[in-house]
Length: 145
Image 1 (cartoon, rainbow, N blue to C red):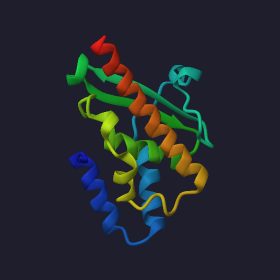
Image 2 (cartoon, one colour; image 1 turned 45 degrees about the horizontal axis):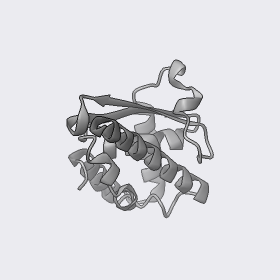
Image 3 (cartoon, helix red, strand yellow; image 1 turned 60 degrees about the horizontal axis):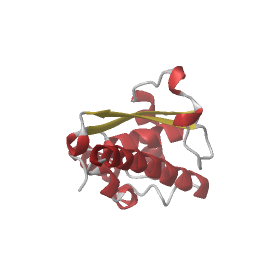
């Protein structure tokens, strides 16, 4: 189940009539996103599999399954930065235990992004989702150990 913020985003996308308006909205979301410090743009935070430069820095508050998931992200491409903001709307603030089981591609399909992104961009979104979910799973695995 999606976050209320993501449901609001899906409603906004339903309201916007054409893809160009949606595209502009995604870019605007990226512009409004919290900036990522240059010191965090290091190889360990770089997401492989993206056509653009992409970094994500997880911020998990709390311990174990009750911890809350959050992250910072950035890209050298404005549309990708916007896609990071869309993923932030989907994942941020959730209990870390929920993050690995979110069907992100199904949720994102509600926005119609897949139909309008290049294959490389779609692969990049999948790579970002996999990274975020693997970080959350690693946190849970450490908590169980």
